[in-house]
Image 1 (cartoon, helix red, strand yellow):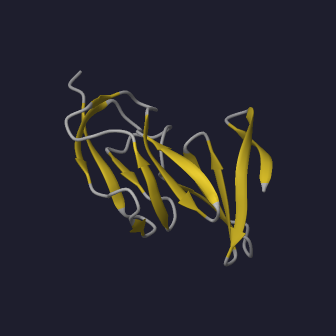
Image 2 (tube, rainbow, N blue to C red):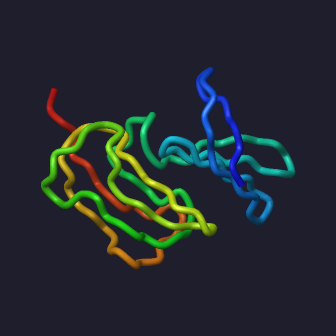
Length: 125
């Protein structure tokens, strides 16, 4: 379903789905979850807005496109791959600028929640 969420005071359209007692919300390359029973929130690292050097799978799903390759220079917030989960497509983005060290998945691969998909060597500043 499509929902409207407010992130850092700005309204965004997002996709959401309730799956096994957890509400998954995907907005701007980031994934958030909330336990439907307790209402406790958490943020699953899946893209722009953090400082992680690893892009991880925010949920179990299938990799449908890989947009970068090892050795590529990328910017913070740049899309690195697309995956399909819960009948929706999600673009995962890099948290930091740098060089792609490894791509640890392949198109068509089913990946588990939390699997490291792309490792980035931070840019020297």
